[in-house]
Length: 272
Image (cartoon, rainbow, N blue to C red; front, side):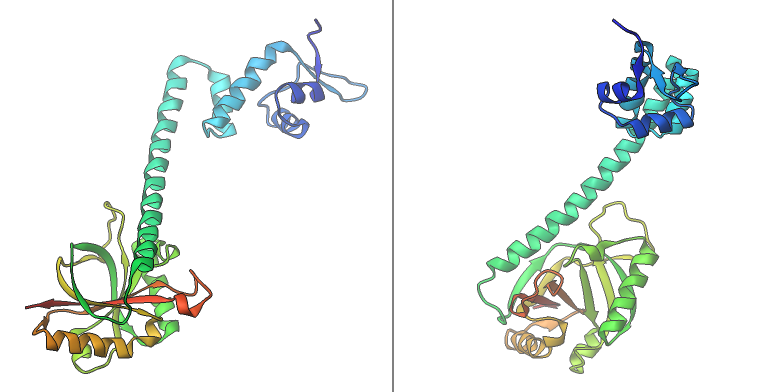
């Protein structure tokens, strides 16, 4: 059997491209054993098959071509083990990040599925919530542009990009504003912090406890009448408000183009 293969044959045998092999030649990663001086054709031998297999193997493990080249030059057990250990550490970090992303997707899925199970809208009720970790930025917000700017500031200051996961963003209305019926004067914006290890001076919590709640079809702009329903419910049931209202749109224009699908919840912490 011949032991000389053209660049086209080499590419076909190893399921790669001629362009890739030419690039490996240019950077010194895999040079042909012979180049025809008359026509510039490149030729490879079977001795180079394993070298190309090693390159493909290490690329599949996400090593850079520079790292692969350094290994091929050095080629000893200790350096190879060190290379694998470093890549294993990077892989573990990627796995943790994917697990975080997966939790965010699952939380949004749960939110939307829960929303679809709600039988009555615009009806107040009392619910108990466990402690919820949030990243919160204090500041007056009274318009949609201010909301968007505040959200970008919150994300940048806390190194988060949670607003991509629709439903994880909320607003608060101070207790004083609620008492003065200023329901559209928000005093903070927050993101539900699903990452357990997030570190930020803006991290705080929504306390575990009893909340007077209402779900309604609409966005933040439609909240006025539902705050009034909720306040009447609180008064009629002898409840006392003990903290800022929480307002969160679960389904908005980024989830559905149908306005009748929009869904927002309001929660006010109360005690008997």
